Image 1 (cartoon, rainbow, N blue to C red):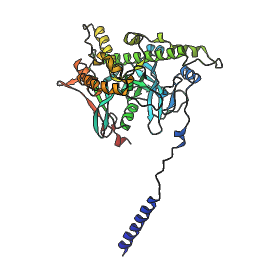
Image 2: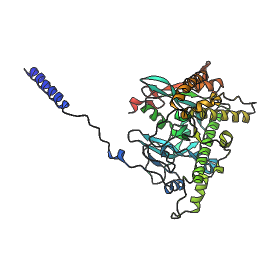
Image 3: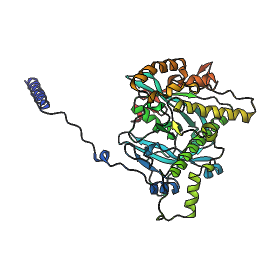
Image 4: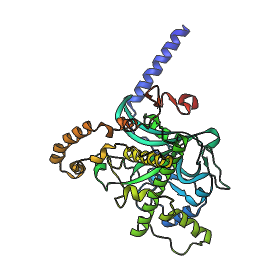
Length: 419
């Protein structure tokens, strides 16, 4: 009797729930007030205050915060304080993405002291796109530096500031990216237009970078590099990466000051000699030691290009330049340069973004054929450029590749155990 009563009660409850659901319409879920905030543009005062701060930590709202040029503030390039860096045993790097919150849409940029030595591994990383659990041929290329336990980078926490994250970082990622407005997604075809996207070199903690990939269900394919000089080569790759990133950032800042995109604040701020000295260290282009930017891109536009100046090709150029410097330093003869296929891109491919619908449809098959014949330009095959240049670590003749997936083991363990 009791069992029958329970069954009857559950049946009545189920019927009641079913009836009540029919009366509920589909409503747009409300956003919390934080997501409805107004956009914020960093003015000259904000930027100059940031510049004269010793170790600034800035929280960026990804969907709205922009710099005076209209580009997303979270895409701000890395900047190096070379005066402090050259005299010490660590590089002082600003604008490192040390933490991100994909739920609230925030990015924390901080100053990090990156040791010059103690790099256990330097890697080319392909963030491989996936859909429905299957790997695609597309992806994003980066450089990753893994440090020994006693040589880990540390977040510089300003005095009087509370820091809730881990001060020590396990690794550092350097990434060439298409700098866009807040909320704007990247379009490959649009990226063939030389002036569509600005170019930026960003730096992340490995955990922050992997989290962004994991949320999208992407995976990391890590290829340890084997550069001339061993660990000295790893350390040179870090230096070259910072030189290129910082040199590019200063060039962008210089042009912003010249064209009026960024204007100096009015004389209503009190500036000390130390403030002025710090600004000079941060913004002057000639503060960069051994700047390779001029030799690499000369007077060409500072823009991202889906094939010529992409995340992949520029990562390869950075590795190639590092290898050449190490070979010369070791007196090991002429360096063997990487064969980066996009150097031979047909002119008509670049005209595709400007073509009308009929012309675009006519040219796209040819572009597909060209890419098919130059497979190395596909992100999934980019590692073969390094393999052919004998720059990848091998074991018994096989290239070493470490695969990390959000549902599997990550560099920091299993996500299920870390939650």
